Image 1 (tube, one colour):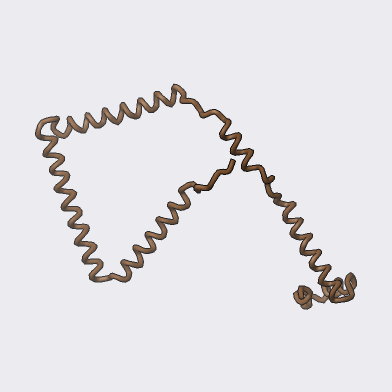
Image 2 (cartoon, one colour; image 1 turned 45 degrees about the horizontal axis):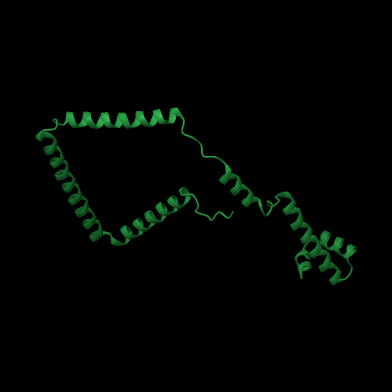
Length: 161
């Protein structure tokens, strides 16, 4: 069976004939060789012990949570303070708390509506002229985005303790 693979190599065929004269002995020899190769591959990259994951998970559960340092607290306070200050500056720059702010929000809403109408009519025109390429392109884009999300997200595997 497996010795048929070696019929093309006369050197290997001669070596097999010397070591194992009968076909049954050759197949046994080839099977032993295959098992030795598997064992050698396992030795090159050994499997972890069976209780490795359980030991790691117990050590993780026993490890204390990292306490917040003063630097972490001060950096969070600084980020929130800067964000609030920028929000107040934006509010005052748009005309203050009086009617100017309301007009700015209303203007923004009207511009967003105009943009959405323009995008909608553009998609409608694209669909009317090239529906198949549009559908294929959007399908490929969706597949690429989902593949990217799957690679970025950590795997949600079960942790057995």
